[in-house]
Image 1 (cartoon, each protein chain N blue to C red):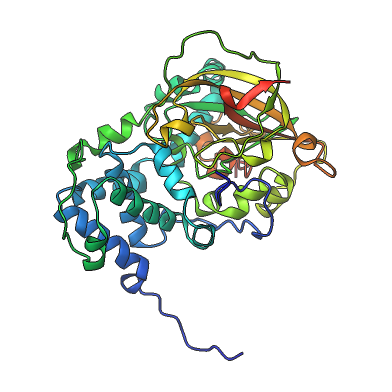
Image 2: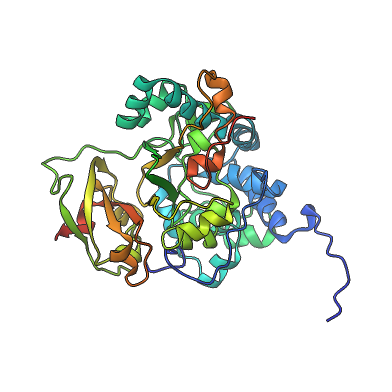
Length: 219
Length: 203
């Protein structure tokens, strides 16, 4: 979706302002936000693509005003409600009022190290030969889906060169919506700064994206 | 305009602190989360998984051409051989700076970052100014980090739009011949492994 998350090339947000010797957390609640987000992700009720889509579906005014952990928590409340683990009555009371759905798994402290070390690989076997090979010229399709996609707006309709052919990966555009993993090959595609940004672009700049096969067509 | 009262932002009174606490309470009472598991997750990313991991990978790549070659071909396996695996590091790629080309990593669409080697991302990496400008004005962004690249240096920006996570291998500073890997790792900053800086010069 053309949501607030699709930031590449937008203007007006000001300087980056890196913080020297930045701590990992700026408040105690940020630690809990991280831990609760990861622990509930272990329910197996939603996947990383659905959670990304929940975050980018926040209203732009909220998304841009929020810190990243706020974005996480706002989206997490939506996911928990959508999947029956949390109700408006619970939130209004600040207490467990309604019964919850049963998760596939509740993460226990003794399993945290192994779970985090294992991660969640999303490469998947795909049948057939890749459509493109390194060196091929490709065009990123121009589409504007209302659902989740990982093709940024700045690349749509632009021509680039395939640099590397990767294995198959879960396709986020369907996986985010409970429509299956439908793995596709992923390609690293390199665009010149001029192709993307046009007049005045930095002539020394190239930008790459990692694009699922169906995002691309031969150019 | 006069505005002279002090804002005392006590964390316990912060509305968002209350919101997260309520959420954790509700989920705990429902038996859905184990607060000790939340503690263990926080402890992992506060004390165990951080940019020292990545610095050790870079130092080994600087010291050992065979490892550097492996890192180029199969970063996930090469990094795993040092014991660094896991969440948001499942599919790694190492990109090597050269005298001609400087690499910079961003996630314009969210906050994708190689946790297994760099730990949790800094706030600026996740915030709109960096995510919006890294792909269109990387030189301007780098100058805000105090890094002014020669005009002829090529800049390659890697937008982490899929599940590949990128680790920049900065150039090895001159005058570091013979330094052991542990000492070399001290020169490898987090920012240099994102591309937002260079490795430190030895003292």
